[in-house]
Length: 335
Image 1 (cartoon, rainbow, N blue to C red):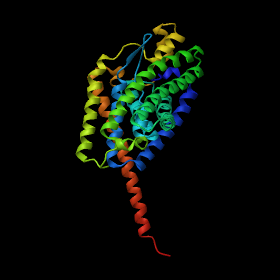
Image 2: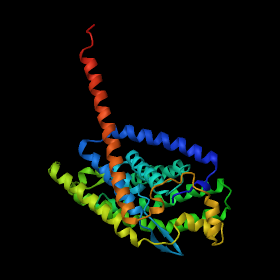
Image 3: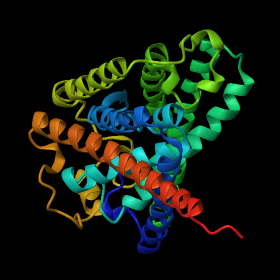
């Protein structure tokens, strides 16, 4: 669901850019306040994993493919604001390094995959998990339903953007219908990953309060060595997916492209390219993920480094500011 430059009007691009920039700034502030030192690598790891899995388009039938959005995955593991931060990092790296999604459409893409599919997913999950039994099965059922709903919700907003651009009304039904199918794949992947993390490191999951007590680590403390092993294993898996498995991705058009081809272009790919327009930024060093193994390596390393780096700096600055305030209070004159 990466929108190219030509699919948006200028007012839509500007408005979504402003909203997304504000949400991103708030996400960074939240990271500085809420994360402890051992959670910092999890932010980078989640970004790297989502980047890797997004390189794999899976077929959904009807000549269409889809890929993980990851908003629900990030929201359930990290919470709503950090989910927005993680998806923003992934989308920025994709747009600048790989020309995946338009530069002028960055705000719109963040609004779809970070705000709606991420922050919106957290709200959906919070409701569902309270309605279902407080068991591991109930938790994972809420995860699956949330992941599916997040994709459909994002496709609805994306359709609105296309209608504002002058696309025919038929694009709405086709777009939402195709993404209802893609959402099934999203639900399967998200549930599998969340289930694995809950099994291995439940104490790191932001929504662990909804898990039954029996699932949580009895001691409440985990060694630094185990934390490093978890991160290294996750990074290794992300690299394996991005550098190896992604070579077998489906070549069929993704949900957005397929919807435009069906509802607007009558299957004419030249029409699709004309609608997408010329990329505003064409200096991406690995455009279209040229040289798959290298693209996977660069993308995973970049998203992990940027994700962990941003939250690490935010947390450090927060700590420095707190110490300065504490110091000034200590030396303040007594009146």
